[in-house]
Image 1 (cartoon, rainbow, N blue to C red):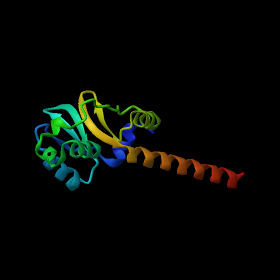
Image 2: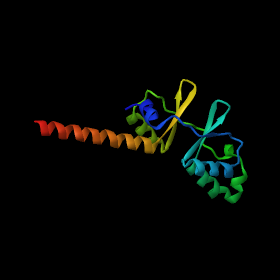
Image 3: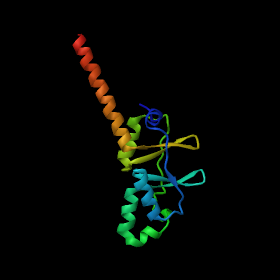
Image 4: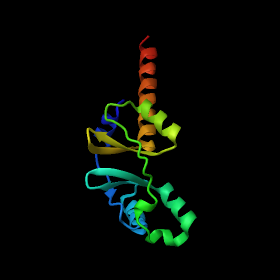
Length: 142
């Protein structure tokens, strides 16, 4: 399965915020949207990702004062992207190797969606279930 198919199923909604937003506001947005990461954009350019892990690290390092600082202070700036034409297996490898749970998807220069590790696992389970059912049908017909 390709990334484009995952986005087709889950939708292309991307939750973004500006790098100058206070971390406390970003935490509220993570909670309201019920997501584990937000894509940080300056205009049309992706400049970072703010994940729950980044928030925990911020509070661990700087305490409650971190909540008043801008997202840019704590966001992950080395953004790893996915392309719509990549396979789920490729994403699984990249996410595992780099220990990341969210990949923004770029179609050309446009932000086309976000794929999470949950999306990838769900896809892998669906493919395994479909394969098992196909084998059952083949054996039953044989």
